[in-house]
Length: 123
Image (cartoon, rainbow, N blue to C red; front, side):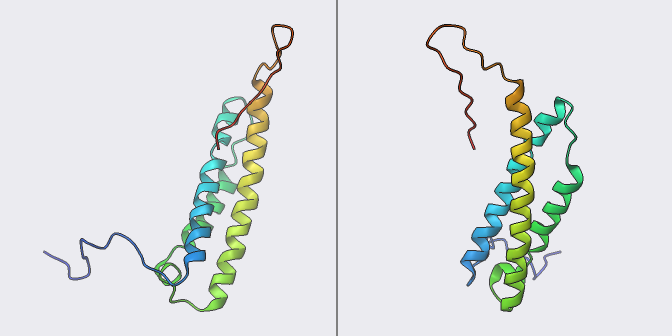
């Protein structure tokens, strides 16, 4: 049975709210960076599953079609911005703590005179 509600050429959402889509994409990337916590978990740091789950719920809630298409009212975009700010703050804290744990495990003692240790993260 073919559904008239599905059109196979729909592959994106046009919007009048480009900033909303931009901050949504940034929130998703921020959440992904928070997953570095799984590396720190391997060394015994508590995994922030509850925090990451709540952050992800905020991201998903603010992706529904009225917001994405730009047909919502101004207040919902302001509320979404607040949620995205919370996600960014939370995942930045998780990410920073996890990276600190990982960095502390890296031997940064130079073996020869004139050498200095460097730790680089590709974010």
